[in-house]
Length: 106
Image (cartoon, rainbow, N blue to C red; front, side, top):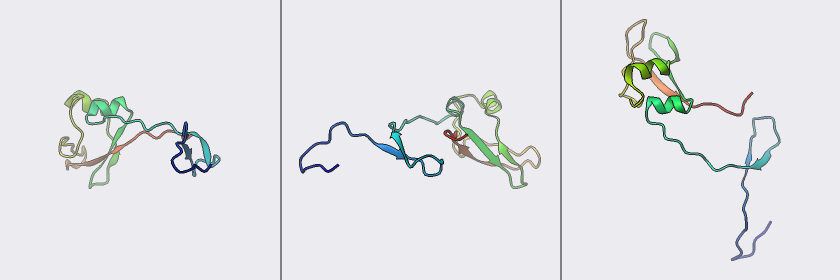
């Protein structure tokens, strides 16, 4: 569809492509992006996010958010430096990062 100069497009529709889903390239209107606030352990739990941790000794896995919230409280920030988590095997501090929920697969 071509628009003449100065002509406004009425009711624009955006489409989204899912190239790796095995579906056709263009499928339906795209919903507007949803913004959420994630700043605390309680926010992580409420929005189904997880923390993945790993240690220098080789241990790695997802942290139990319910246990963290029971110990630190739901208003505790999860940003680097706010949680000091140690490995249960070697006692060294572990590093961690956020894993967002994955939807649309399966």
